[in-house]
Every structure is written in structure tokens, then in C-alpha cells.
Length: 121
Image 1 (tube, rainbow, N blue to C red):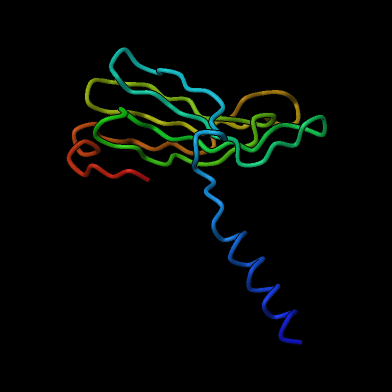
Image 2: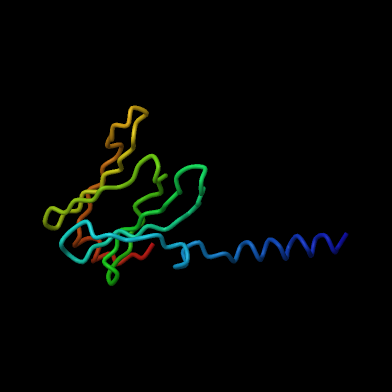
């Protein structure tokens, strides 16, 4: 009986040590603005031939901050960023059943505040 508990604890420890933010899950990045900002996309779950991949998006300038924007299914939507001076507008876009694109949520961020906070999520 003790063997089963040891085996269970060993498996639990091995699965808890998985790092889902390592660079092997990196899918792509793109620059939404003229400045140094970029959006990095990481694969959370790859469904292969059965549908779209589940991706996590991060807004970063690679030096001062890295902010988690959200997770989305690339077959059904994504995120659109627009820069207006110091303000960054992030829109979550979903594709409806008719194929139209619809804005679901909008976040407004201050570039100065993001740099000042210096968070790396």
C-alpha cells in the first residue's frame, strides 16, 4: 500500500513541475504599433486537425513589462490592439456563426502605467 502512495506522490510531483510558459510553446509574435510593443502568442492547447489551437496572448515591450491579455481559440477569435499615443486599446474579437466579427470586450491601457508597474506576468 505504501508503494502506491509513493508512486502517486512521485507522479504528482513530476506533473506539478511542468512549466507552461517556456519558449517551446511560443507560437508567434507581431507588432501592433510603430513603437517597441509586441504581442506574443503561446500555445496552451494544440488541437491539431480537430479545430483551432488555444492560445494565450501577452502584451510586452520585452524590457519593462509583460502583461497577460487573455486566452482565445484561434479558430473563433483573437485580439486586436491599436495605439493612440500613450493609450493602448485592446479589443477581444469573436467570429459569430454567420462569419461576422464582433467586438466582445475592450480594455484601455496606459503605456506609462504599464512601464511604471513593471509587471511580468
